[in-house]
Length: 180
Image (tube, rainbow, N blue to C red; front, side, top):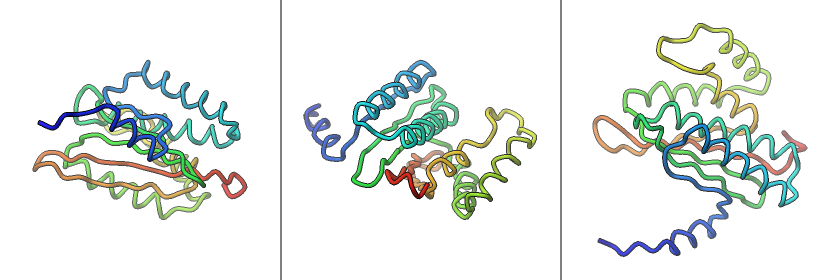
């Protein structure tokens, strides 16, 4: 077994400009604490309120996706916020059943084809639509992420076995608020 050094992990996070990273079960309390921490960190950096709002809402939606849809009943996953020169990138990941991947990929692919006005219409239509049995929420999280970010949602699927895969969902929030 390799001798794991936490300092190596710390340096890797620093090298990727990670301002927040969490791995574990995402409860409502943990989600609130992490969201508050992001808000405080970005305010201290002097970031514009408009950008903070976009990062905050995107982060919350991605964390809720982990909490609600993780294959592990404890809502286990990983989420990180990175700062880059021209954007912030929010990355999330969790195990999911392989049977869920096709519908998720299709939904993200469809959302990525829509313009701003089309996203608004789709969002409102989804809010008014009937919920599938056993599903929670308004089925609008990914649409909201696309609306807030103004950028495509990226889905990466890491196949583990015949039953499950580790999915990564990421999105960028531009620092240029004039365009979004």
